[in-house]
Amino acid sequence: MTVIMSLYCQKHVSGTKARVVIIIAGMFLCSQATAQTFQDNSNSDARLRVATPLMAHPSNGPVVPPFSRPEALFMDPFGMTSWLRTRGIALTMDNTNEFTAAISSPTPGHPDYKQGSSNAGQMNTALHINWEKVIGLKGFATHTLFTSRYGTTANRMMGDWLAHSSEIYGGGGNVVVHLVTAYGEENLLGGRVSIAGGRLTEMSEFSASSLFCNFQNNGFCGRPKAAIDNQYITSYPAGEWGFRVRGRPSRYIYIQAGVYFAERGIYANSQHRPGFHFNSSNIVGQLAPIELGWEPLLGSQHKLPGHYKIGGQVISAPNPDNYYDAQGQPYALSGRAARTHQQTWSTWFEIDQKLLHHSYSNAEGGLTAMTGIIYNDPRTSFRNYETYVAFVDRGFIRSRPYDSFGVVMTYVKIAPGVSDTDMLDLSMIPAKTAPNHATGVQGHVTVFETNYQIHVMRGVVFAPDFQIYFHPNAQKNLKNVEFIGFKSQIQIL
Image 1 (cartoon, rainbow, N blue to C red):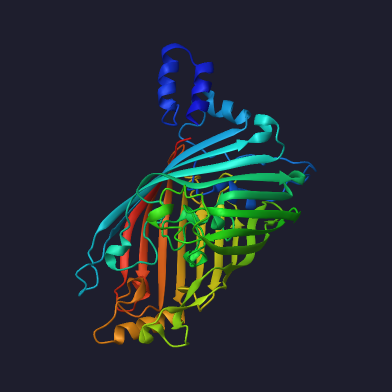
Image 2 (cartoon, rainbow, N blue to C red):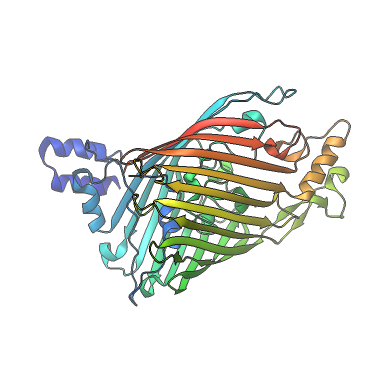
């Protein structure tokens, strides 16, 4: 990327200015001094293509869909962005930062709990290349995404380990460079068929929505947390080897399926922390998701987009039972290892629909409703199911057309086997250490969040945020916790 920028600057900027530009380009930014909303950039182009209906009159040949071009602080520094994009190269760069602070005291009797605050964030750099423009390889593009993360999350200080109050924490945390995805994609028949393979993030395309990260809590942002309840399901920023095929039999309907190779320890420090573990030594099975989606544009005057999807997957890899051992006895009592299941599953049904459009706002303005449910195999899951409802209203204030208001509530039910195991562990004398950092029986948790996104200037969004955890860590013995904070995003390029 640095070489590409340097060549551009050498060609188009002369003398002292060229030398200055080349130095800055070495840091991925060739800048000059000069309306955005929150975007989920974990794999934004992949998500947007799923969420965009086929053009009315597609061609019959291979074609690379246009890469997204978000509103940025530096939209076209020295003409660099336009020069690159006309040659098939799209480079984007952004920073997301999240701060949360507890405004309630922790549950008494737990000396490790404290009322505190935290900050977490990341830098994202994405490189998309249209190889048809570069070397004439029709319909073929590559997508590479790097992230750098820092910080921690405040919810653990209050005893909750289920939903980070700052979703940007974790996975690739506290590393300078973490490879998220690196894959190729061939688009055939005018975009009717898409085939992708390489280092992929499964849940950037299945059970995915670019709307989730209008919020900050990890129980919802990125994807509802129950969608990645299994230890082998990859979600940003974790990647694994995989293949995905998507077809559009009609303009507003798609069906996609894939095979991903389940790797042990995808979020562990030992081999996967930097994301460059490419060999097959950790592969222990396969994941096979499938999803059917309907993406209509409703209404006669204003075309109101909606997304309706149903899907599921079979996971063929060793997963422990959450209650029984191999002899059919509770492993909390027998002391034996948990029974192993070679196959398990998960399912989802999700909807988002714009209900009305504000005539004085841009195309994205309006009120959108979201709801869904994710249901997992109760034998092997921790979160048996999760359901949610959310509303995002963008541009409802005439004088602030790029601002938005959001509210979401999620409910998670813990699998019965997990609750029963907690009960057995904690009833022993002396009490055993329960799994999942539990200090009480885990049953269910509800998280409420609301925020107001302020469009500060081109490429900059700032959102004050409020969260409530009802039964943190899904435990009734822990008092409810309230957090205040903010989320900011700066789209640099």
